[in-house]
Length: 177
Image 1 (cartoon, rainbow, N blue to C red):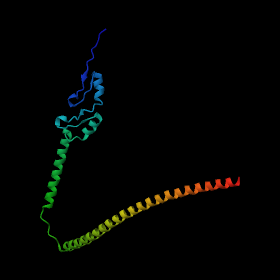
Image 2 (cartoon, one colour):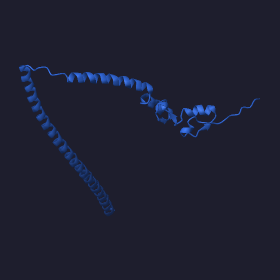
Image 3 (cartoon, rainbow, N blue to C red):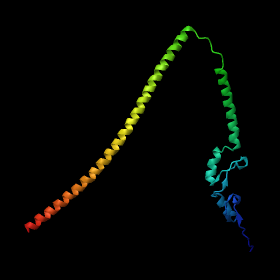
Image 4 (tube, rainbow, N blue to C red):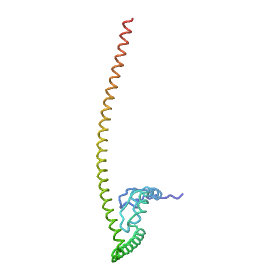
């Protein structure tokens, strides 16, 4: 019969702080649970480490992920193009305004002012109502506490009356005998 020497090995994450020691089978099992597992983007500068399940979740959104960075660059380029188009649109010289459009514009501006005033009024009313609501809630809480105290007193009185009734019944029973 051949004898096998089972060598104990350190976890591959020993340099990160893991102190697990075991044979190759034990190491394979341990790696499924090792809390020192690193993000696959470590070479790109990611320092995340944790349980393999946590690492898998992290890797989906890791900002050091080269694939994510490529996608981000494409997105940024697209956004930059859109911003350039918007800038070009808003810096175009204005078209001349016809008299009927000017009149409509003044109506719109006046309506806007009125709506702004109404909005301020509504916002002020909302603030006041919110304040009143808070005060009512506080008052209601005080009333609730008062009622609870009265209920305790009432319960105590009921017990006293019941005790008195029992004592009265005992006295009546004793005098009848």
